[in-house]
Image 1: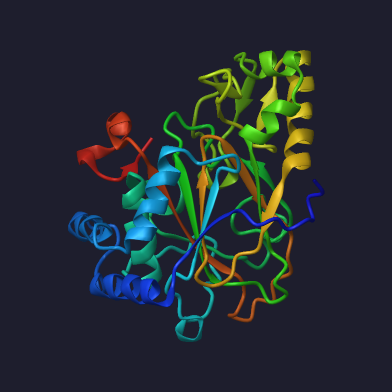
Image 2: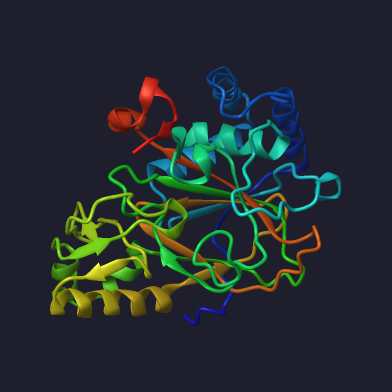
Length: 323
């Protein structure tokens, strides 16, 4: 499948009444401090009051994310006309509760628990994904050139299980697209030899540039792990290095299979993409920002299905992994 083809992903569409109900719940969480434990407790309780079709769809996706590993929710309350200017800074985050931040957090609670990493954007739970002047070719959320396939924080022992991306404002030309490739569609295209190599600890994945130097481990790890017929994946195109000739061949074959099966969706304001980070790599097509205050603006949070497993990385049983 050509990477330029736009293919609809699994969709969940809220009706107008559902949008209104979500908006009311989100507004009841404002004002507040997103990273405060007491506010997060309120957001978790609010999840239970979200419209049943939304809760049911998210829970079904959590149980099994399907062949594509992505769920797109349409019709969430985002009033584009009332938004402030798109933030211009590379480390922009959302510390104060807003309707979009509340929506993201409530849905993260439905998938498990929201989580963040101290080395990335100061450990804020809700982060802005915006183009930054001078960072056009940066391979990260501040760039606007093609963002290659990767798992979020694939280098980390406790990578997030889900990545949530809520569109507040689309790019001017409406061409920026979320690209995804799910291992459940990629795996059948791989040779037996490549599968065997990808399951071997013959790769090193370094932290992304946003984490800075000195983070993560340099121990060899496999790209695939778990069940042979439905494994998990850890890789980043620009950060994963093969250590053997067969690993190099396998990784190249894997990359080609990702491009063959790649799906692209263009998010509009009020669209939320939930990516199953365990089985799906994602990236973004290139676009041209104008730096005029009306550029593309997504907000992002991570969710971990079993937060207990990362307890040794989270001081005071908080939501931020400090190492």
